[in-house]
Length: 82
Image 1 (cartoon, rainbow, N blue to C red):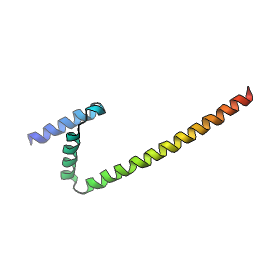
Image 2 (cartoon, rainbow, N blue to C red):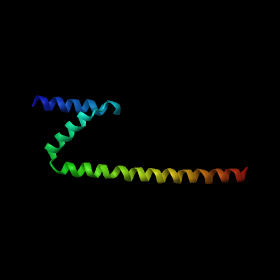
Image 3 (tube, rainbow, N blue to C red):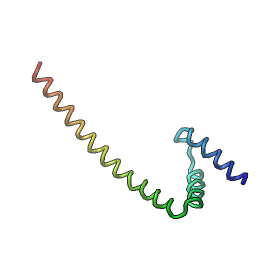
Image 4 (cartoon, helix red, strand yellow):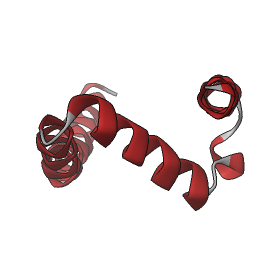
């Protein structure tokens, strides 16, 4: 029981730390603990999380392209009025 409380304490310290201090062994330990607690449903959660990463990337790429076109249109309107 002591090791679980130590790991959870370490988890809360890790979440408040910068991303560069998160180590692979922490990820493995917490993933294992989640699997032991939630069972196979944890894999569904990780799968959905991994599927949202490319969707988010594509959405941000499209929004960036649309923002660039919007700024170009705004600049052309400003040039016409001056």
